[in-house]
Length: 89
Image (cartoon, rainbow, N blue to C red):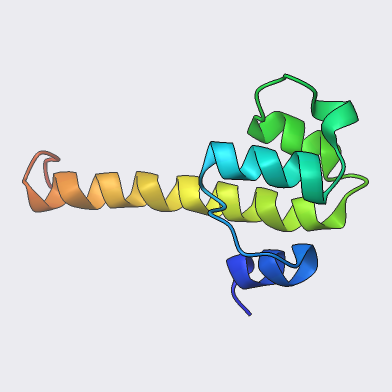
């Protein structure tokens, strides 16, 4: 099962996991974490802290880390394709 599908299954609703606005609503309404988050910006660091007691957030943290890594790899591949990174050797 893909990461997003696991999250949807555990929370019971589909939402845009990459949308800060939608994710904030899920944190508040579906996971009942408003008391811990309040008006704070939901950062990866905050998610990691909250994931200690909220297992579904561990999956979301994993997803966000993988997305970040994929963006970095994609950026490198685009630079290689455009010959902006010199060949080694």
